[in-house]
Length: 399
Image (cartoon, rainbow, N blue to C red; front, top):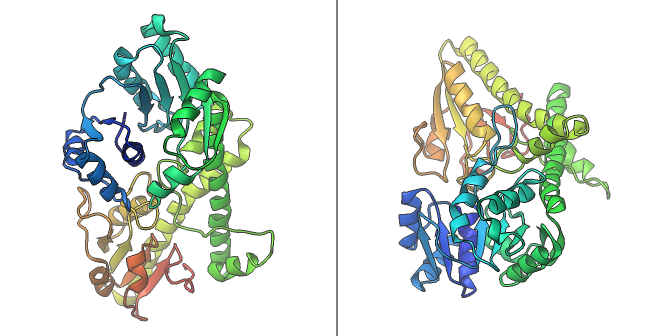
């Protein structure tokens, strides 16, 4: 259930092992695209796998569920404006498959979810189908893949699998053994849910340290890239690279699931989340200041190139992207002519996209937001004002 950035690769990998897979999505365009053997997202190797399994008749996409033996819920779990988690998509997907469940089936939630979600969904199933209580297996197994390397990591990464009981844990582990080469670690559902949130919260805290350090270095007139490289020479120090914030549907979202339920205890997690959100505003303010300085110096409005919209390098995923947020603020709050660049997206409903070299050549101010590989080979002009928030130049400190 769900054929997005995780659901489709999972469906394709499972199908590649000779298992018949029905992928369900609410978007007719997505369904039609997949049934043609094509893909609607940017992910290396995925296109070849999907083409083969569709051609072989092992994967088909539909708008509605069908009978099966294993049901995977792989739908979004966003948060509401008050940062409270929204599991309505998980609930909706579950209700859609409840009529198709039968004795002995395995029901798995992969969507990142707050603690207790799996047990709540189990109660939902029992309420609608009381005759299935203790007759089906229910487990939680979060994905832990890196966009841009999903196919490899789906098969090779370790997985944490937690059932609502030991029998469900074992049943789910038996299923994942069919396509996962990494180790499978059995636990209970609550621990598996918290494990996923903990992994992403840990990453968020580490990134917040790097982002905070970058703002300190700007104030102290120190090159943060050089500083981090030198500090990491210490055998027990491994500082991450700063950026213009944190985006995506995992690290930018999941920590709030802990904070919302454990407000008094999650002090560091909350502060890290606020720091990474603030970094995007800090970057936008730096660009707006640069625009004003340019206008004062030249008596004309600048041309600004915003380089990158995705939430991380070399993917097309714009969910929760700080680069997209920064670009929107520059367009709304400056008088500049803003050129928007995202080499991994062919078109966008809100932005008129420009090729990266063309945008660079036309710009007075170049804002490096995402370290996409094509940006590393851009022919540079020393006369440009460049604000490097992601380390494209490595020797330029945003100021």
